[in-house]
Image 1 (tube, rainbow, N blue to C red):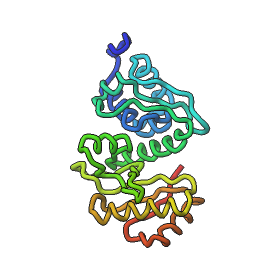
Image 2: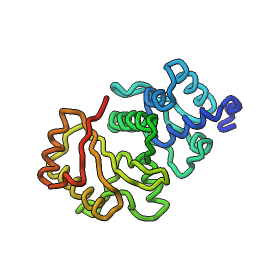
Image 3: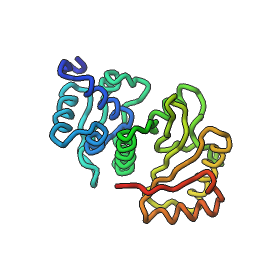
Image 4: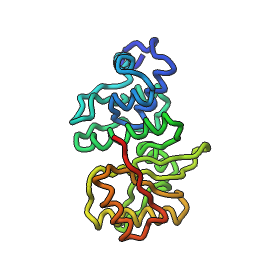
Amino acid sequence: MPGGQRTDRISQRDLEVLEFIARFGVVPRSAVAVWAGTGRTVTIVRESRLCEAGLIRVLRGVGESGPLAACTAAGLRASGRVELRTARFSAAAVGHDAVVASLAARMERSGERLLSEREILARERAEGKRVLSAALSSGRFHRADLVRVDERGEPREAIEVELSTKGAARLDELLRAWRRAVVERRLTRVVYRCPPQIRCFVEQAIERTRTAAMIEIEELER
């Protein structure tokens, strides 16, 4: 009983949903509902059950995110994801993180297999090298928002969620770094998911860097 709270009412399905929250850190209630395939009432009841058991904490949303859930240390243990760290709430990042979690929920609901950025970090930490990150010219590294994996768990495709415009130089550097990752056969391709108003900026960057053979754009559903 973590924190002295009752856990006897936690079902196997609750633990599966808990693992989804653990994987993505700070997750909007709406994304949990999509991933679990539940309506508002069932989602809130499950959320309350996990919260009462000390496995998650519920945070007030920012902007359009709605209420958010984050795993506690006890929740990480209960979900079997002790290689992940407890998520830190960032008001600046929550909008982007909520969109990524919602996209992942839809993709996994349709049968896709994904690594979250938190799982990418954990895998690289375990292997002691940046096996999935893009190496920047400054010597730093950049992780994708998601990595699609095959049925054996082997990485196939990096997915970047682009919601706002970056400076041209910064975006060009990222595309070149991802091109190197594909050339080195660490990934098969990179997909930028972005809303229509951002697409043109990514298209221009792909043209400038001549990376169309490795990098594709898909519309981001909101």
